Length: 338
Ligand code: TRP
Image (cartoon, rainbow, N blue to C red; front, side, top):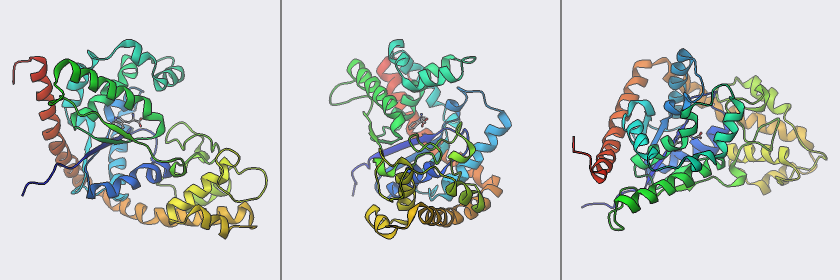
């Protein structure tokens, strides 16, 4: 019996900074159940990371740390293709081709490029400008139908769709498009985790103040201290209102995502109790949520041979799909088959 092909999901995180509770609750945790219904590919985008200078020893260590955390957070390597972008040569190869189907003006309009080039004025390299084209290659190589990303990546996804549609028009037919046009999968507002000190901006894994983010590997007392110092809002009423009460709403989002409690139930439970009680409950919930993740991480990270095996196998599985797409593209372009 032949079964219908499953929808394909692909996402990636840059191995820079440190993974936060926001990466876990807003992304990785939601990726875990997808493997029941989708073909899932999750990578570490090391080629993207070097658009900003990285210390080689730190980068290497971080890739192993992040891949251990992917697995510790529940991404089973036998149910998900876990890999490092630089291990699959097709990413760089397709990215060159897609460069020739992307306009300078389109890339110049990307808000992330504008942001990053104003932050790194001494290193506005061509890779930083070209970053979204490599991201388009990442996505299109796997025929991804859905791409789970944060709100900040929506513009890059739009560009990916434009490039795919343009290439299909030039080289495909409506019955046989070269690329699958992907859809973004963006978590709803209540599921987004914001900074503890700046609750109007997302919890950032690099660049923010140390106390703004809860890192997945923070010890319990650090977590508790950071949550106790989190910015709240005037008044003392616990209710979900992102505009009027961004700090309290963020604490509620964290509590809801870690315990499964609804916002209504949280409001009821903390009625008349003030922010202190809420913070205590949030701290406890986060510590309990991260305890098993940290324990599993320690085991996984200690077994470097095991991690290398996961990455090698992931790269082989990813390459099979990616190379097939790349050869289809070569053929569409009239390149002589290899
Ligand atoms: N640009 C993404 C980010 O900064 C990371 C990324 C690279 C990505 N390639 C991707 C995300 C492909 C989804 C799919 O968050």
